[in-house]
Length: 71
Image (cartoon, rainbow, N blue to C red; front, top):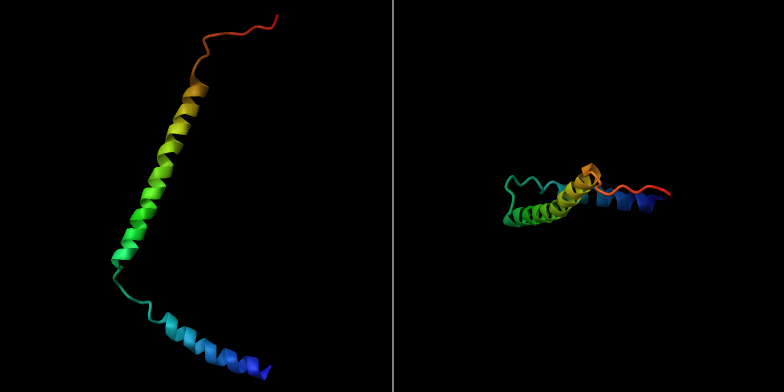
């Protein structure tokens, strides 16, 4: 148990020092490239979804021209 406490006492400050270096104010070019790629994927998924929904609404609201009657 004492060894575990020693290891945790060594690891905890190291992770705190590693996390403190992430306060950079500027975003790099790779962040913007990633966000742009993500936006292209989202738009690419939205176009077929909108087409599908409009087709569905047109199909529901369209009046059927042929009436079928049971004989």
